[in-house]
Image 1 (tube, one colour):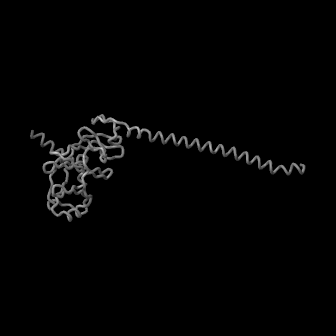
Image 2 (tube, one colour; image 1 turned 45 degrees about the vertical axis):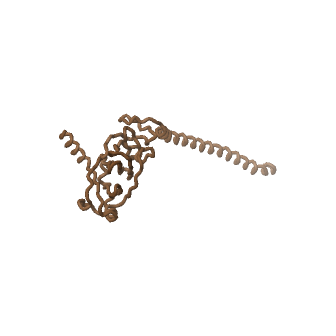
Image 3 (tube, helix red, strand yellow; image 1 turned 180 degrees about the horizontal axis):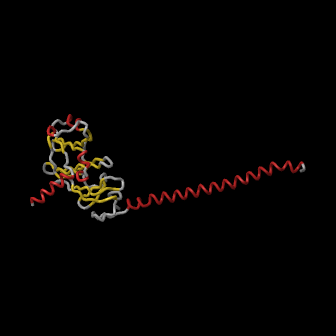
Length: 233
């Protein structure tokens, strides 16, 4: 090999390596772009159904509800369990509860009331509807699946007809009010939020020695009372 040829060999080798590198680089960029497009397609496919459902309208308030309503998230199931209406409010000394028992406390019409959350875990006791005085109605709700409490108020002459209406795709309770379903925390619920304290029985009792306590009846108790009322008629 001549001296001139040997001088050009490193330059030629470098040029080949550079060309190969450019080709490989373009291939790699193409593959990454393809993956990004595929990922984007998957994201659109995953989000679009939920977005379409949450943005759609029309709730019939019946068992055929599609769950596509702006007042609640898509539904997993629908039920119609009337809230527990006017349950007895017991004196604190008549109830045997340990101090660490979780409760929700409210103050209304110059009286304090504690609601035992454990008793409200029963699906037919998730909502308690009470009426005080002339025009004060309070509903206390608890969804244990997401550990969520909401207390609402209305100025009416009878208890709020608030029902348990189902469960959304996030396992949160859905209300049924006058034929319309609302998520438990929906801002569209046509009732006013009411202040409450989430604490323990011991702390609440210490703050309010004359408190009453509400232990909503269990599903079995509710069915028994219903059968008893039906038989009386």
